[in-house]
Length: 285
Image 1 (tube, rainbow, N blue to C red):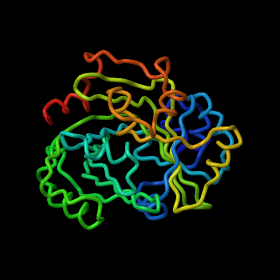
Image 2 (cartoon, rainbow, N blue to C red):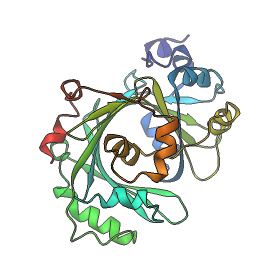
Image 3 (cartoon, helix red, strand yellow):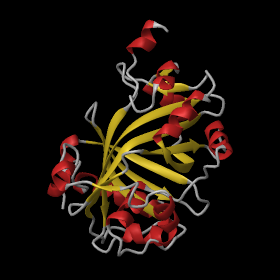
Image 4 (cartoon, rainbow, N blue to C red):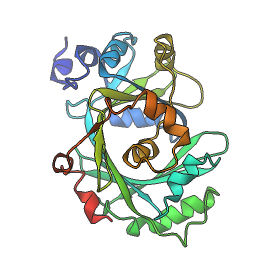
């Protein structure tokens, strides 16, 4: 093994196959596979099966590496109206819908304000604005960006709406690049949701997401051969449905029942959930 690969820090939960993959830089990944407009497919599977998946990837597969690290902590704060307009648009399967969040990359302290919009054709467009880390608990400095994006995308006239923090997610992410199709694959471990009243986590389940310009990629095919199929899953909406069972949740009931039953998703004591990256939620209410 090369000295560069020996220096790479692979997630211990994903095994040695990850460390064997050649690295790619963030700059190269963005240049080759930014995919701000894309088709996403999400899969929920045991971490042990992800380890097997990694052994099946061709040697051309590359893994994002920054300063020797190959998995990174992500924190996302989601915002919605008091009556949960964004959530309900998804629950009632509106053709056009949206999500609002601030995203913090904890290893670098970099922060972005993101507006994700789903169009009538089913594609997802992500609009991003560089954001101050000190403002990540509020939309106020970026409110004009939010309103302009939602109006221009013809999703909702939001200027008269009030948005407040609703939920925080926290997880560790590994990102793969498939050069043959310039697709990306993300593997999220330790996903935790927190809404101020309850916290849930998926300790032994990975969220694998393929991101393509429209077609399918090799990882989709490999997962299908193993009888895994894309599931309806959004970290915001599925997480909120799990945290608040009284909410309408028709699109995610199968996912919650099949992939996230009580034995798989676990209640986290709030004393443990109040970790860096989750405690900030309280100040955003």
